Image (cartoon, rainbow, N blue to C red; front, side):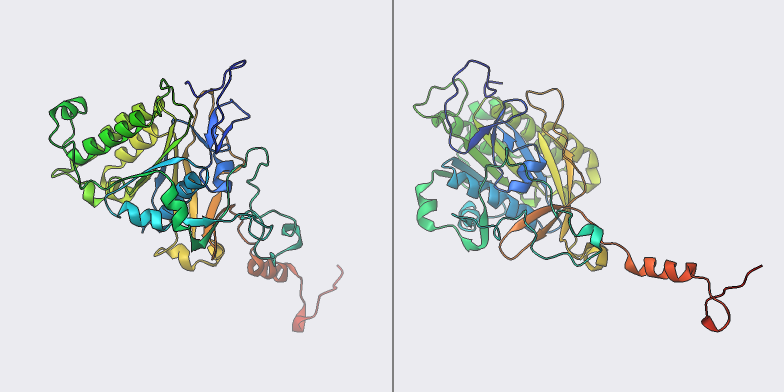
Length: 368
């Protein structure tokens, strides 16, 4: 891949990027530093991150907002697409960056002192950071990004209303086989953005930049065809064509997918994960028995790693742990290593059961 740094070659500096220390692949930040560390330092250029949405899609939307906000702060260009929510609304909800983060603002620090057994006192809540790899910013979810900052950024919005390529025979033939023409229109708009703004690898722009593509809730009810088999075929074909576009460009995509819409066709999700480069799933506790389970009282959901990117390397990055959970603080979204509390009640009961007692509750000292 052209974005891999070869020895002895001169690579142009692109704001908001960093070469991986493992394979020299150019990376960008997801906007969530703990997630960057989990997936190996960041998202490789030319790759797709799929976020399988939680039950109500709230947390996946927040993660997408982090990705887009990081793009604006890093002076990257954005392409925001959604059928369910107006792209302008998504952009208006982006969190404000913390210019000078203090230790109390950093998500990886402990928010609350752990009042548990002494052997847990020195255990880090989330040992996910790597100082050599972390290069993103921190954000405050209670504040919105300044409108002037957003207006200065170059953002392309798509909501499927213009449909300028619906009746274009040339492009319908180029992206043939789609039953839902919205997929053709979205692909063509992305292709035009990559071409017009010189994001292709073989282009020679005056100054290189990155295009961040955020697609919200792809495959939702608004993307349905008349027949379920047509819906599944269009969905998978989009990933196939989209991946081909990204592989030859300085662009990175984050796509949120409501996987519950495909529960009756589980093979679709498996094939989608195969075509994605990185795939994670969010399991929210909202509306489930785990919401009231005291074991998970410190978390709002679990984060499952479905696939890790393996670009320009023989093996994908292997995180320190796959036991991950997330929670929403007032100002931030935090991903942590899942630590279950010790079962004090059972331990105390066991000690009482093991204590020998004699008549009247007194300890027996009989010698035989």
